[in-house]
Image (cartoon, rainbow, N blue to C red; front, side, top):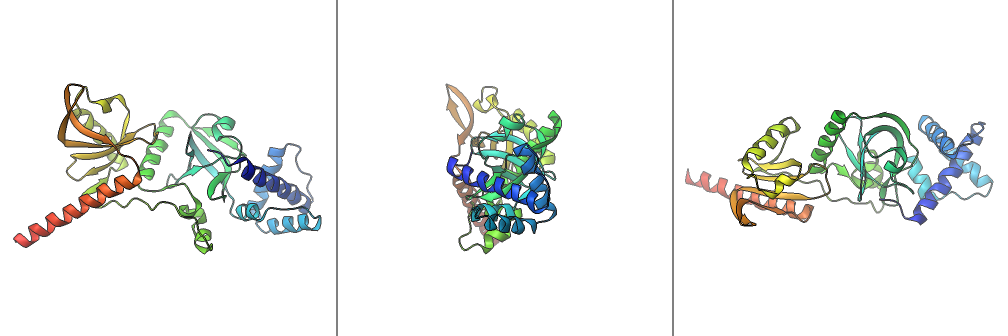
Length: 303
C-alpha cells in the first residue's frame, strides 16, 4: 500500500526542504544524491532533535513553506534497524529487531520490495506517523539479508503477534507514538487488540510444531485444508477447535472443528469454515467464554 500521490508529494517536498536546511544549519555541504542527503539529515535529526526547529526557522526566514503535518511526523521519526519481512496489499510488514512488535507500513511512491528486494532484509530505515498511517520514508540502508531459517522464525513471530493484536496498522496503537496519539485532540484509533478468553488460548511459539503435527495426524488425507501450509493461531483448551491461518498470510483464517464432521465433494471431513473478519473471531471467543462461564457456574451450584 502506498500513500496517495498528493500526500506523498506533501511529505517529500517538506522532507527534502528540511534535509537541505539541516545541512545548511550545520554548515555542511549536502550530498549530491537526494537519497544520501535525506539519509544524512535523518541521522543528524536522530542525534540532535533540536536541529529540526532550527531547520524550520531557516526555511521561514527564506519564506519557504514547510508543511506542519510533515514537521510533526519528522519530530516522531523512528530511525532504527528494522526487519522487513514482506509486502502485502494492506502494507509492508516490518518487525523491530527484538520481534516484540509488528507494523503494517505504507510506502511513499514505491513498495519496499521494489527498492531492497522481495523480502527478508535487516535494513536501516525510518518510520513515522503521517496521514493517519505508519509511513516508511523510503530511504533504506541494507544491512543483511536474512537466511531462510531466520526469516521463517521472524515470520512465525509475526503471525503470533498478529493473532495477539500486536500488528500495528495505525500510529495510535504503536508503542513509539502512543503517547502523542493520546495527547492529540482527535487521536487515531485502531481496532482493539483481540482479547483471548477461556476456554480459548494462544498457541505458544515453542509448541507450534507439535500443534502442526497434531493437526497433520487428525486431518483426513482429502481434507481441503491440506492444500495449504497452515499456522495455528488459537485453540480451545481441549484442542478440539482451532483457529488456523495460511503460513504465507494472505489474510485467510479458518475455524477448524474436530468435534464435527460434514460432507465435502462426496467425502466426510472435519468441519471448517472461513472467518470473515476480526469481529467474527472476537464474537466466537466471547460467546464461547460466556458458555464456559455458564457451565462453570452450573458445576459450582451442583456442589
